[in-house]
Length: 462
Ligand code: NAX
Image (tube, rainbow, N blue to C red; front, side, top):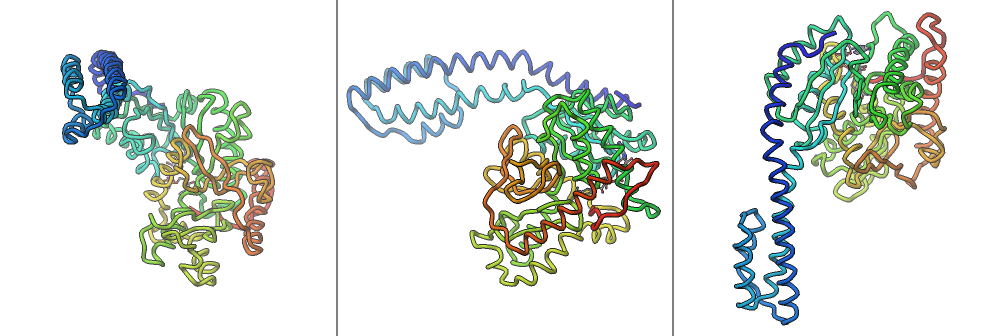
């Protein structure tokens, strides 16, 4: 186990230094801010009532109000003088504008210290010494996962053999001196790694080696994710949000969920955001537009070659994508195949290494949208199915199946209902659903020793 290795304690010291400075002045400023807000509101209300009673409305110096809104602090006595002058000069409309400006100012004054006071969120990354970890860890330390005002603790887990590599990552992390990073635990003790975590990014998994059949991969990883589920159940936060990345991601997520009975099933998700981004990127490239203009690409089913990338209800600049592309053959053929096989293509191009930067980017987007909300946008995640989740599209319960979702701050999500499902789409859904059912039955019944079961229809995609 490697815990609190010496450079890491420097990270801790750095964090103490920050909160040591910040805490006293912070609470003093909060109190000041509150008093300031209360008094100014009181005077403003008096002024508002009076000016309304007198029925007077005049516009006054917009520049002055803008300056106030932008945060010029003024002592209370100055505001009192201003209000007296305002009453003498009898301008009422201006006072209303000022009230809004002051509201903004006092909010701004109070929000900064509150952010500094926030409790750090503890994020676990397994397989932290791997390729995805090398991009993901630094993005989280910079505040890209939960916001630039949210401190984080990082729990970095690895197998013992990979600890020297992880130690190097921790050194680099310390050298970044990221202000939001409060504490780093780098360990191969899995109980330490999972203890108290609020967000678990389960990236570590056994890769498929040339001597392995798909059933072997399923079996080996089933053991890893059974253990992860049991640890989440026993030592993590009861509200932990779990994102499974390690392949076969959907079935691994299902296994972890089944082995964590005290944690709600909706807290387990599998990453299909990389596939969604690949689909969005491919459409944008074909149409020569920005990916930001393409909205509503959906990934259905498994993160494997059987997945169904669906743009039938997606839009580009408000126009339906099928109409903008104008080539159904391309959408059903080359486009679908590109998204399904992109991982393999990247592995070949990188000489055996899988998608890493794009995967880390997708993990950040998946988790951020899930926990902070997608602002009405449709996003795809592998989620635990039930009559209410996927039932309306005919997906059987008890699978982790990628679906179109809308997400809301705090981790709530709902399936986007009522999307048209053509005969073609139905046949694609059936293929990926069959594969997931097969994976489930093999993973839940196979042990590494028995090696029972045959290979599924698809292959995991990286
Ligand atoms: P790497 O092989 O570079 O890293 C994996 C790391 O996990 C290794 O350092 C290994 O020591 C560690 N590890 C293995 N078992 C562990 C355990 N039980 N506890 C902790 N650590 C463990 O792979 P990388 O490129 O980072 O990919 C990681 C996983 O993501 C793979 O399973 C890969 O197939 C999967 N992917 C899934 C994607 C998705 O969209 N769902 C896309 C990207 C990626 O290919």
